[in-house]
Amino acid sequence: MTLAAPIQLAATVNEHLAQISNTLIYSAMAVYTLAFFAYIAEWLFGSRSKVARTAAALTAPKTQETAAAAQGPAVTVKSAGGTAVLERPKVVVRSAAGSRDVPDGPGAHGGDQQGDLYGRIAISLTTLAFVVEAAGVVARAASVERAPWGNMYEFNITFSTVAVGVYLALLALKKNVRWLGLFLTATVLLDLGLAVTVLYTASDQLVPALHSYWLYIHVSTAILCGAVFYVGAVGTLLYLFKDSYENKLATGGTPGRFASSVLERLPASATLDKFCYRVNAAVFPLWTFTIIAGAIWAESAWGRYWGWDPKETWAFITWVAYACYLHARSTAGWKGRKAAYIALIAFACWLFNYYGVNIFVGGKHSYAGV
Image (cartoon, rainbow, N blue to C red; front, side, top):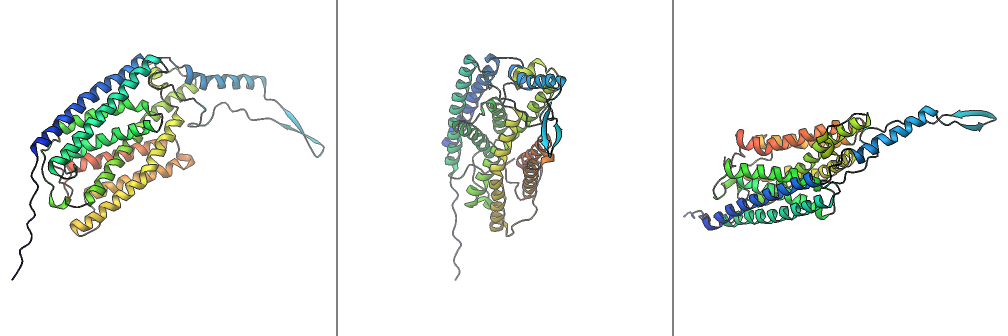
């Protein structure tokens, strides 16, 4: 006599909660749009001084050093065993790239009270949009009684929520990241626009391979890592622009009016470089854990730890790229712009792993619903 295998009843989809989730996501997009315009107002109506602080920091010391060099370096005389020794101090005209003593910019508001008011309104709207979007993600999960990470639509709405959460957490920790707000809201609107149009999938149950508690561990850490990598990538891109701006000023060039108005408000290139390194270095161990957790889950689901599936392969490529960045950043000859280029390549690998593999490449991870 044989016993029949227990029948696992699939949970029904709560269409009412699913509709509430969709409404909340659209509402969040509307609030993010208002926040986006508020950030634009912060940049537009804040003080638009040309090159005052940064130019003074880079050109004034150079002028003083040039004048000192024209007069000739001071000569001191030391006695060394009865013999007079002349010591001529080395005149430094310019410090090494990435290590200039340049003050941080005043911020997107330009140090202006009106601009600061718009910035505070933008942050308040961003916080409200974050709460509404997070409620939409929770409602989506409740509609099917599972983690909301079963397809690309759910990945996208969760990813953008976490990215905004990382930004707000940095602000709460008193970090100077308000300059990120305009770029963040623009990216989130693009992400959600893609989610509700191209990637939208109706609420449904998971495929069998995803029925595991590892879904909560592996996918949640992957999304968190991606959100932090995104913040680092935006900072790295702005670092490259700010470094070029400082180089142009230091060599006597005159940046354009738009570049001066925007780039002077950002933190100094050295500050941006340090910030990007710290966020990428902080999340890299978690990305390592994410890959290991995925391998353990793969053994449970498919009977092997690693099979060079496209998703696994590109996750490993991303890991190698960020490892190269961290190594380059700590190597004297590769600091600055060279390391920044590697960081952007690493984030491009992560983006391809997130979008490209799921959409364009077949494999065992092709359960994304697109």
